[in-house]
Structures are given as structure tokens and as C-alpha cells.
Image 1 (cartoon, rainbow, N blue to C red):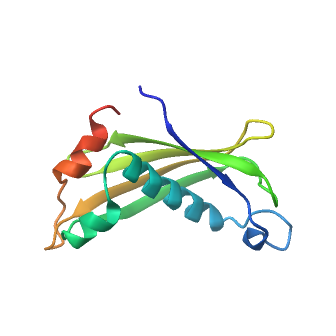
Image 2: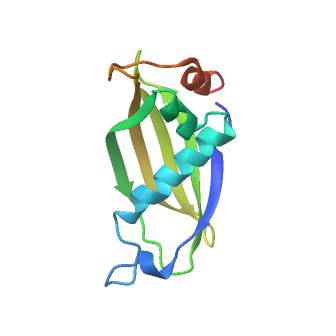
Length: 133
């Protein structure tokens, strides 16, 4: 298995809830941002696919929260991909707090691609994501 893609981020104050920790819904934003950066890193332009009538969509998210992030925490989001079927793929993702290397979250985000008619379709650009995975 190849090394995961890693993106470093930092918690911003407005992402916190009343308890002073990152709101659970904010983690979806971290994961999505890392997936988009991963796609660009692998030569897949999400916006260009959309212009071409190919829509990458999330059909399921499974998140296991292990610990909390607080204001100013630096962390990395790791991303790997796997093929889950003919037209389904998964992004395995982890958030790791850098100060202590604690795994904060583990997730599996399952997606597919739809063509301009709304039918499942894995384009060559998306297919290449699994060449090394």
C-alpha cells in the first residue's frame, strides 16, 4: 500500500462549539477539503470534471471520533483511496493531532461518479486514482 496523502491544517476559533472543542460537523469540512487537495495532487481537477458533466458525489460517510481538537491545534488529514465496487470508491481518512500524534478521527467516505445523465460512471481521470492505491 502506498503512503497516504497528508494535508496539514490548524483549528480556527470559529470552528469551536460551546464546550471549546471543534464542532463535530466541522470535521466533514476538514475531510472534504483534504479530499479535494488529494484529487488535485493526483491530477484530478474536481471543478474541471464538473464542467465536463462528471459529478463526484458522496453517498455515505462513516466517522469514528476518537478525541477532540481545540483552538490552535495543528493536525494532519491523511487520505488513501480504495475501490469498493464497479462504480463505488472509498476515501479512508484519518485526522492526527500533531502535538501528540493522537488519532482524533478515522473515517470512510464512500463515493461514486455520475455522468451528465445522472448515471454511475467512473471516468478515466477517476479510474487513475486506483492505479497505486
